[in-house]
Length: 113
Length: 115
Image 1 (cartoon, chains in turn brown, yellow):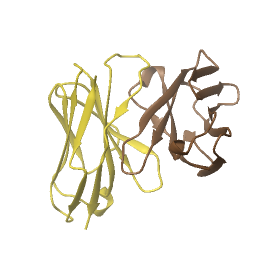
Image 2: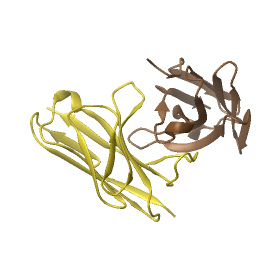
Image 3: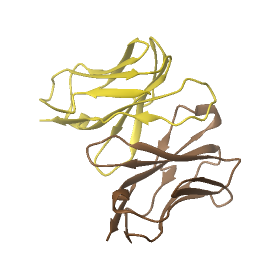
């Protein structure tokens, strides 16, 4: 059972525009959510996180939104840059199992000029 | 600053051979340590985690084992590799703290191919 789902395997966005990556989850016990960025042949790099007590968290060009009632989170990148081209993973954990991150399958973002 | 090292970066092994992948963390003490595997086209799957020396929790029963002989060293092993063990293996660490929301930080991984 896939508890964290990224239903779009790929996304293509023009440079300067907004990129929106989506993630859905099924476990209502999840209370901590993260986004990671991964380049080929490298490990994932932590981007931004959000706790379930918030519905928005910003860090520079990156904003994560959390909709608990819909069990949905999204990552907004504004403005998108060619260097943002990578695979993005969302992940989640719950209070009793903070060591157990559950990852989605990833969305490949391509930002073109 | 903290850094995490994994080696080797790539490895080709025959079926039935043993395996030892090593991971070390620098710049922090008492980290929580993790081993993940990413199969082709899939997300990361947690294999093992450790909250201290000699303390290993296994998430997926399989052909692999993990050990933590020192505070900042985490080793992934197998006595006899299977074809299904092929994949991208990642080590990660995070600040120690039960019930604490801290991100995990990953190494650059080992690409393991079994022939």
